[in-house]
Image (cartoon, rainbow, N blue to C red; front, side, top):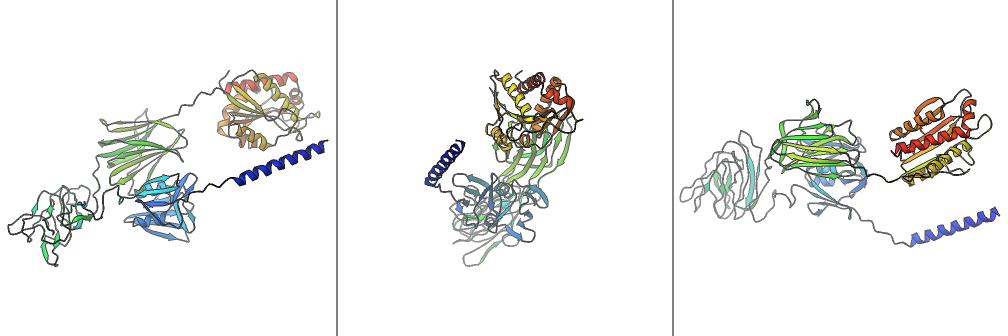
Length: 612
């Protein structure tokens, strides 16, 4: 009879598998979108498209960097890629999350990888290091990047209908310089900066006097159909030169040159061709031309950061000036991002720690260099692991502070403009009150696996099941505890079966009950755990069982038993006593002793969940 039942069971299983396979095969396959890469709205042709690795977006660095005009190098022996621009040099190594920016080590969210001879690095690092704004479109699996040259930012050399702006240095007590070029019928403009007005005189020819006003700097050249600014039939005044149908204007003194259509030199003002003057205020470079080309001067910061410090449960940023910080929460990994617009780092800036009781400040970090991300490690907090900060953008000025978290966490951000203090207070998320708890109770061994044998020939599996069934009876009327047994009779669920049951239920607690065996002289009770989150229940259980059973206290110990290691909830294994010891064995199979142990286990579960 058993044979026919077995054959019938096999036939039914095969039929179900065949139907399931046929159904699955009939389902249409969903097309997976191919990731694409865009820069300033234009698709980039890359040998290898963007990729998702461990919830991080990786992009082909050579394609991105070369589009921005950076120099990219590859060392095949060291498996290293370098990206250089000016004085900034970035060094990355394949499969190594540590990179260097100008010799200083930074940690990437994901190590660079090589696919189809193409190096892919985290998009987040690209954005923070190169100052690129980016967007990940999960639906199309595409990356959209916006450089400083995008249509969303000031023009840096395009030809259009309106005057462009030129470049100037940061404010300083000595003259600054600026550049701008253009051609056409409308003057171009250029910006410069400094604290002293530049001076210059110029001569030229034209039917209308040239004009020039103010202090500042700007340089530019241009050409048109008629002479530019300078002196005409009636002497005019100007601090630069340019050409165009209408005289150009200049608000900065300096050296500028302009040329007429036939190549004749119209005017030279103190210096080599194209060199700019100096001034305290941004000015316009005199140049004939429609939307002359040039680069945009960095916006001046309205706030200067002096300090970033970590206090218990708070990160504080002090500044002078005015700013309005914004914040948002990102995942994969968890982090809080604070952007401080129109801000840079003051010369006395420092990052470090402070004690709330003794308000002394210990500085450990300084100003991050160009393209660098500085880190302030944090220890002793449940979620915050470190604070990263950088000059995220230079034009416009923007500082970025990132709080790296080991888990999702709440926070409050306040900005006290009168004292110049931004405070991010970390708040532990509210844990919803549970109406019930699932506990998986495991009677060790069973069926074909009897466990250890006692000195009188009794089996461990019988003791384990007897105690577990008594616990079940005690907790049967406890409405807030859903007790699930791995076995209720003499069967043998595998260790994987027991683990999978608990994990699939998303149980709140797992307990495996056993009896031990060693030498005749070894006796007592031990409680084992594997992970830190299990220690609390292990201590509660052990203390209660020792008090109830009265056996020798062998303590709470760690072990690598699969059922307490592979489960995902607090998990404990109880070795109640030794079957190999005459005294322990006598008690283990005593009904009254088993009742006391079962009561202690039930009480421990209720105590752990604060139900007693």
